Structure formats: C-alpha cells, structure tokens
Length: 257
View 1 (cartoon, helix red, strand yellow):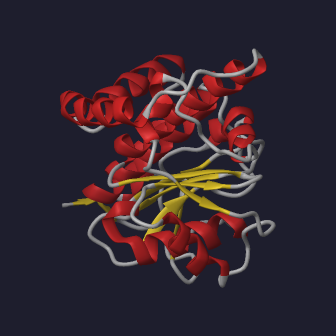
View 2 (tube, helix red, strand yellow):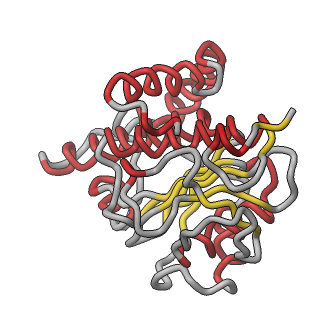
C-alpha cells in the first residue's frame, strides 16, 4: 500500500517500506547528532530503498544532522540521478563511495555510514589500526578491512579498490581518514558503529597511558564465538536502535516529518 505524499511531505507517493526506511534513516541521523558523531554538513549515512533496484536514500548536502527529516532525505540512483524530485543536492564524496558499495555488495551493504569522529579517525591513522586491547575491540579482530588514503573519495575508479580491500567484511577503515560501516539493516549497522566508536575511544585513552596489554588470539576467538550467541538476544541491533529512537523522540520528534 502506498503512503500518500501529503503524509510524507513528498512530491510523490512512496511505498510503506520506503517511508519506514526514511523514518529509520532520519532517526539514525538524529541519533548520530545526539551522540556527537556529526561533522558539520559532511559525512553520510545511507540506506537502500526496499524493493527497488539501485536506489538509495542519503542526507541533503548543506543540512546539519539535526535538520534531517524523513521527507527531506534525497532519493538517488547509483548513477547519481535525483529520482525523488528533491530540491537538494548530495555530497559528491558521499554519493561516490556509497553508490559503489550499494551497487556491488547487495544486502551486505543495505545500510552504510561514514564518520569522522576524533577517536575513529585517530585509530584509522595509527599504523597498527584497531588493536585487541579492550572488550569492544575484540569484537572486530579479523573482521575489518583497511584501505590506504587516496585523498577525498570523489573518483569512481577508487570504488573497485575500496571493495577489494573490504573483502568479506562489513567494516572498512579508510587509513588517515575514517571508518565505513555497513549492515543488512540500519539497526545492524548502528550497533556496529556504536561498538567500534567505543573500541576506538578506549584505545585512544589506553595508548595515552603507555604500553597496552594485548588480548591473545585464543581469547579473542572465544570472545567472538560467545558474542555471536549473545548478539541474537538484541535482534542484530534492533533493541539498541529502538531505545535510542525513543530517546531522540523525547528530545525532538521533528525527524518524523
């Protein structure tokens, strides 16, 4: 059943599935803003439009994260065409990077975020990357790809190298830049970036104190095995995401418009 444009403040009718995706993505932007993960008008979170081929939603370029709403998200295809009639443009770096992942990785990259938080950028700039020195970091050992810095990501030909360096993972640390985190759903992506942010915060604090204590691979293996069993209780991030949605709704519910 279609959601009428008058309800969505859109100039076209969108499906119920698309409107839900718009709501979740707008909420995600507001959550990131609340957590201090915004970067002026830059950086991006995107989600594939359900039941459509090669179209996705992304933030309007020029708006802060706390200005993003369900209806002002921009719908574009992987060629960069505005297919939703939005009056806004999109950030070329956001389009180039996200479009390639959405086009070539399927459901593994249905939801994608890229951030420039101080701590994640610091770890991306460390020669050893993310170290197994805390609980959260152990979640990600052996599950992260690394991509050497090539400058701002606006050239389509870099996309092939990004995918190659990602491998079978869902997190790509852009060295000297920042992480790209992917998920099959927005909640799954969100819970991963939340844990990665915590891992990086703790690593920065630990290294500031001197030599860290590394966790052995045998313990990492057990940790990841047991974590995979426990994570099913949270519905792949659903519980976390819904809790944060309730919080940002109490603060300001305008993201739903």
